[in-house]
Image 1: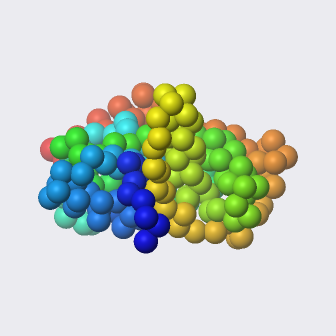
Image 2: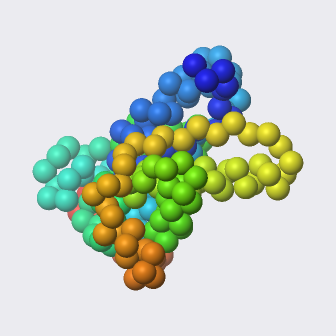
Length: 203
């Protein structure tokens, strides 16, 4: 409809529904028509299941009542930081997305909370739309892609999913603008310990 075709498609990532909705139609073109396109999942640095998790069987819920599902996971008992993008705090990735990641058909990057609000503020100033913290992860990665293309002197058509407004998140923006927000990152030790606990449970 826009008369363009994307070189890269970006979606924020919690469990995978948002990301899949925007990227899977284009992945189909990549798989069936050989389109040269990248798809990128943008997840929080505080809950980096795709970038730092492990592909293995895990439960889909914290209590361990679901069947075991193959996924990239940080362990079903992983307790992420209380970041403002609450919808992206799920411990694992959907099994289809996980398999695509494992097969190298997609990529993922993690984004720090302060970087998401910086991108969201810029977007609001430029477009007059206040984005949700979840969507702001995709915006941050889209900005990175644009800056990278500019540095390389290449034209790049970037599509990202603005999936929600931030009108109920104004307190979070107020915290950011006041300098009261912080970044939350998971340590390698936390990830390793949590996955080790999962291995014990699975066995």
